Length: 311
Ligand SMILES: Nc1nc2c(ncn2[C@@H]2O[C@H](COP(=O)(O)OP(=O)(O)OP(=O)(O)O)[C@@H](O)[C@H]2O)c(=O)[nH]1
Ligand SMILES: [Mg+2]
Ligand SMILES: [Zn+2]
Image (cartoon, rainbow, N blue to C red; front, side, top):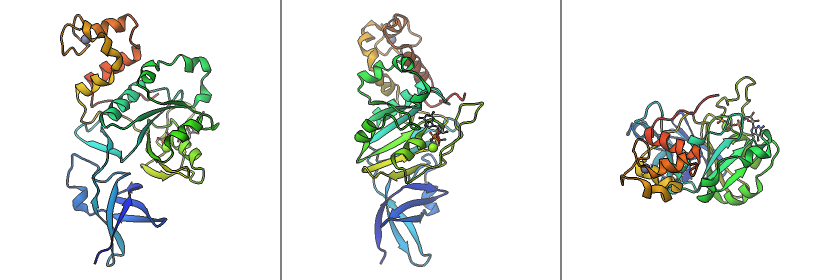
């Protein structure tokens, strides 16, 4: 008789699942028939999934049998192969959007793409502005954060190399599963190392001439925290196409536009090319943060394609 076990997926490497069973790291084989069943969804198994496995005494290896229903998932479209949807992780409590204040610069449009996705999948987002040691107070004061604060998105300013700004963040995410996502070089792995010092994930060097990261983290990894809960560290993304998100979802996110909708002549106004548009008027009068309006237009006109700017 096959003895079944249920485990959590901590990593996936070349078609092999990594997990822990009784504190021991195990490798689990995925039958090829499952991997290639559905070419549109590239992630039949994702980090964070609960899966059922059994031990095959013949091959002396663990074999994947089935996946439990996901409570939720965060997925994105590949910006080059927009028909392919990729699940970054599943069963998460917080989406930690990690960006650096400098080296690389803040990716505002990417933040909004993450927020729209988090809202759609009902996963509370957190924004972490890392590398606060590289900018001054005035810079932080001048950031256009009003709409995020009005939406009650928790915002943290951290310096991972100086261990500053983490107390409240730890308090919030302990006993939960938090996915850290963002572009390469923003400090995701450095933050994870700080929270779990025994671990020492590989951290990238930022080259002198370009400030961009070097894609140090190669695969998504779920890491148990001593304070309770898990962090999921993930490789820097180069683009984020929205997945299964409609114009309605996009419009819904921009709550600060709501008070001006009365000024739009057409009920389904897209606030882009139309005349008599209350939102555009509010934007031109400085009543809506410029960066938010620009993000909105870019996302609405190009939902599935977004390549972040390399510096
Ligand atoms: N000045 C400064 N540098 C930092 C800070 N946090 C991380 N770094 C540096 O930024 C570089 C990239 O850090 P990583 O932690 O590898 O970045 P990552 O987001 O994990 O990058 P990928 O794994 O490629 O996605 C390293 O050289 C870190 O030392 C910080 O708070 N301040
Ligand atoms: Mg990393
Ligand atoms: Zn309008």
